[in-house]
Image 1 (cartoon, rainbow, N blue to C red):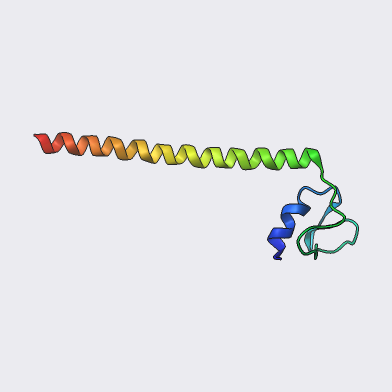
Image 2 (cartoon, one colour):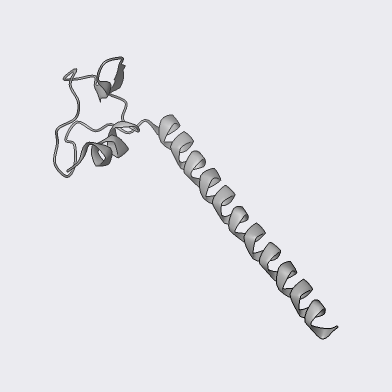
Amino acid sequence: MRREERLRFCKMCMHRKMDLKQGLICGLTDRPASFEGNCNDFKKDEVQAAKIVKQVYQEEEKESSGTWTYIVIALVIIRIVLRLMRH
């Protein structure tokens, strides 16, 4: 399991702790997470989890609205080209 995968748990855990040298670490061990699969000491921080879910939702929403913008622009360009071809 890579560190990025472990951090998905750690970012929402009540035991998380920030260390200036190591980054996000476990407050119980004062070390970066080293578990495989699931952490036996994981305790969900509901407030932080809600913030993360909201952030992910906003990023996905922004990304999808950007896609629609490109689709609309493409349709406008196609319409202009078709009009020019008729003349």
